[in-house]
Image 1 (cartoon, rainbow, N blue to C red):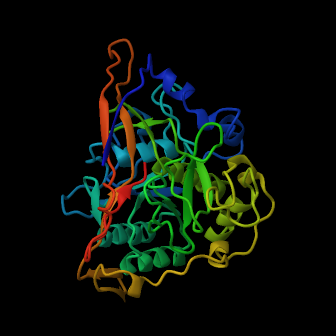
Image 2 (tube, one colour):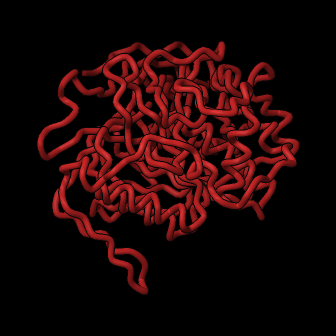
Length: 392
């Protein structure tokens, strides 16, 4: 199933910044946040389609990464039709462009992005996503954003997530956009210990297409979101992919301001400083909507261990519940070698609203229609293959 939506007109690049409602004084209060932390010294891995490092709003923000699909690239280009990885990166670490404050500004504008390409289109194999998570953990990522998911608890993916958490990485994943189409749990978001992110709109209301359930940890903006695309322009879209990016950026702000905190303590701050401050996770909002400035300013560090692993969550037996194949993780002096005999397939979850051309003296506004894939009802799984989606 796909969505076709027309882009919203943008008169100039400055309108992008003014249209970033999550950063305004009624929501995240970004100007106050940036007086405390801007994410400097942190590296956020974007396990996705690559990131367009040439975008003016991402200049200097994208580190050499990896493409694990055998194309010889280092991840600093985006091969997806909907600019998925680039949009995630912009939300996290956009700088506002050559004239600061005019273009797309990320919530953690001094953080660095480590791009890890694991696919080029809407479908990505589970072993490839697992490899991407492990590669990110082995190459210095303190936060790993995975705006991808599959309805099967793939064993290789679960082990990769466990490995990354063992390397003290905060693993953030989008909950998915099938809340109005069966609401299946999506992985890796539903694995214990992962910060699973659902979506809300500008009013703080649960976004109706967002997944919900026992595994939700926190909620973040997912509707009417602007960000960067892979043509030096902009995109406006909905989805929990973007909600996850805001949570990853918040984790970067925390780790920058408090570099001695463990990943578990970062997560503790995320879940104990929400707007709702739920003591137990709500099926829709989890512990509540993230509040970055409260998370940064909190003096409650909590215990060093990941608090989500202590929560009562729906148990997942990847070995018996999934028929996606047999997988082995081999630990060696060189790190982890991933061996797969069969593969589940992921799809990125996104509902694009079109690419918006950056405007200026010589760049007239051009609105284009964007298209993004969602599965048709009943097409989510087969006897050997599960399909997953972008969560944007």
